[in-house]
Length: 402
Image (cartoon, rainbow, N blue to C red; front, side, top):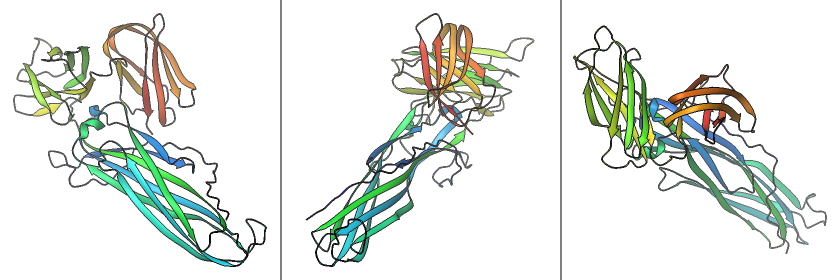
């Protein structure tokens, strides 16, 4: 008896895609005022080699500065291409049948249980002549495929709760795993090989309600961690009105906000602009992500909000955030504490090539702002700020949009 079960490797490139796609929104995902939310999609598509039965996909979290996240659609498209070779090794003709089975699973944040799909297909009968001694050719041999056993098989899970884990400035990891078996019947003496090549897309579609903001009224809202239990909030107003009231609101999940302190407008004689610096002292040290925004209510009861800002109390070693992210040309590095000194700024592509560099001097500030002369090709980059006369280095992922 001769049996050979092998996977034949194919030379296929690794492809990573991160971009925006409009998607249809479920009726469950609506803004509080009944309007349809906007959507943003991050996805990766990979050609998975036959030897890789488990592969991770890293997808961007939702930047809470963009608005209120109302639901998340986790989705995947799977195409499986199968090739098989079967040789009769008996001294007499045999009719063979092949049963192909596989199970595909996506695991990751929000998926409990995992998204799974089972697939079965029968091949044959293959009436093969007696072995002629020349392998992989002749009337005793059959080649099957390439056969697309699954063509863009779509699976999705719409999540409307537990969304805090999706918000931040990092990435979410999802794991794709495929398992299976192939059974040959007809005889016990044969030579057989099977290989499968999978093209898999895993993505997240965020549905969100943009934060209302009148740029002529409130600008430059920042939330900066000063210690483990204190956050400094600041913003400026233009066309300040005496009857305005400002509520600082905080949230641990980015969706449910509670007012933590209120102040009245501070109008200055002869000026319509005001600068606000408000320290917020927490009753106990912060844990994880805390989201902040400012609600402005005027004398007539009209309400507007600033964008949401995220303060992280667990990633102190990183020390800064990147806004906006994704972006095209405008970049802001917002530090968790005031910094001072001369910094070299580098943007590096995924091949390790530095595509942009410049030097910037910071004078007791908590942000570095600059504009690229032109938009690099869309994709993932690394942003790094190195102190020229010191030991501090700040780095993070920067996404350039189309």
